[in-house]
Length: 140
Image 1 (cartoon, rainbow, N blue to C red):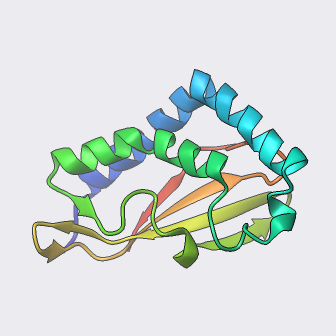
Image 2: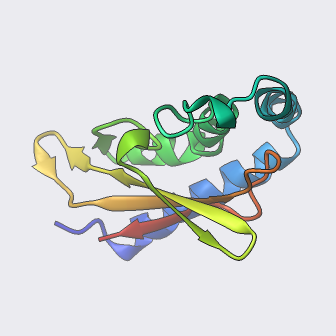
């Protein structure tokens, strides 16, 4: 079952809006400080946790960025298994140039009707809390 290009556009617009709002939010400033502490003081990346659990600053930032996306989905009767942005341990990360791109798989459904596989990709940096562009939705 497809969701239609109109709804797909609304969902991408919701990601764009969440990203734009996050860039100037108090949450961004707070999470940026948490990111710096976790990376530069706590040794989060060197601890071995990085491959097992998501970076807490990015995990919270992704949820903030995705809040309008989740609202649009719910308004249209769509739920996700797992919740937004997806399961970290099943996500994939690739490096392109000086940016990393982490793609999460979402399994959307309406009541008991699966809607295929959706992917949400977040461009980000490991040097600082930074999303250079809105997350990108791919509806397969």
